[in-house]
Length: 230
Image (tube, rainbow, N blue to C red; front, top):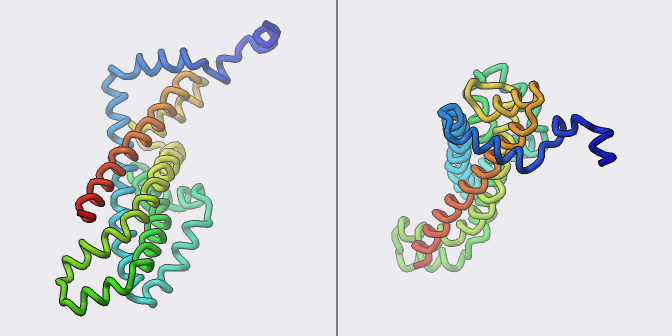
């Protein structure tokens, strides 16, 4: 009672779970809600997928060639250490707001995927590779039967970390860049107009998307690992 009397407008600063849930329930049937979800998911998760492809490919090249590894090392270190806000502001000089979250998501995902896959490849049992060469096992079978099972656990660990990271970075990029019809724009508008239930509702949506896509992606990786192990 004392807290309520002292802060009669407390709901402006901290919405109750019930009010946030009710606001989310109001948003769910609207077309604007699903357009914002689709807009951000395509760009943020698309950046994640692109970075997984690039990180895995470059990790394979770096494992095979020391010069490639040394060439990429400074760039990977820079992405790991420079604040994401600095990259977002710098990227706005070159990119339009619509593609900003795609670029930032891909950029932030690259270091963990590249480094983990590189470590997984380097940990591959060299005796198995030598035995495969002695028995003239085709390259495709060597990659599928030896390389893939060794690297997949490292890739899975990186993907689990990177999926949460890409949503945080992608949402931050949208809040700063304000592309039309994005989740970041909805978060910014909720802050500007002091719509705290909206802020909590849209935050819950981002968390739900991150968790759901992570589980689906890791399920696909586990199935691939099962096929490779079999």
